[in-house]
Amino acid sequence: LREGDRVAVEGIASCGTCRYCLAGTYHFCPSIRIVGMTIPGGYADYLCIPARHCFVVGDMDLATAALAEPLGVAVHGVRISGLAIGQRVLVLGAGTIGLMAVVAARAGGAGEILVTARRPQQKAAALALGADRVFDDADEGALFEAAGESPVDLVIESVGGTSSTLDTAVAACRPGGTVCLLGVYTKAITFPALFTVVKELTIKGSFVYNRVGSRADFDVVVELLRRRGAQLAQTMITHRL
Image (cartoon, rainbow, N blue to C red; front, top):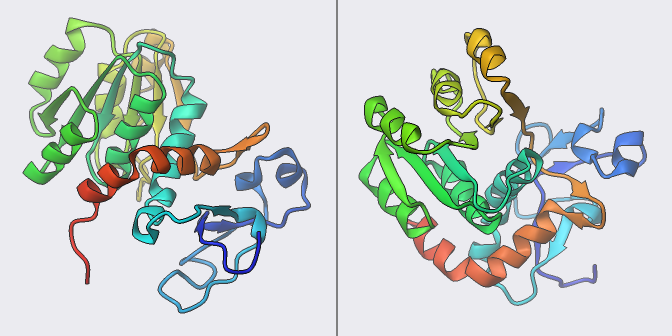
């Protein structure tokens, strides 16, 4: 980095010296700090972050570059889920992370992407960003009917909170498929163990982002924003205050 560089910033600060940091899995760092939670956040005039968590974006519009963090969460989840070209993906939830999961899944080679959404603007945004079909999140019947048409290889859960979406994910996923949890649950939930066992599902938790080999998740994110940033900004940024 050089003084004056415009950068996208990972929302974490690791120690840089522990076994996890040295292996590139710095999101497992025992001393991990989180921007806006355990260290001062981005509404401050200045933010002090180790250089290794900053990624140069060149002349990219900074509002577009700000989308790197949620897109990084989605890219990480898709990467660790092992999405293969042509696979069928279901994204539960069409908030910021769910919509970014649509972008990441499309970039990762998904053949068809199904999405559940609650609000009209979320449905429109999901379709604009690459979803093939969008279902009302209250209409599980239509969702399961669509899931029965062809196997759902990967379910990305982005709702969390107190919802019962893990049950929906396990029910919709094909035998031998994968469920990736991006949503942050705020209370203990019932785990559908029987169906997980019978279907031999893989349940993947996904926490923020890291580096795989020579490429960090944010390296992928910056490339995606260079290619699709204008469309993402137009779809995702709805108000400026």
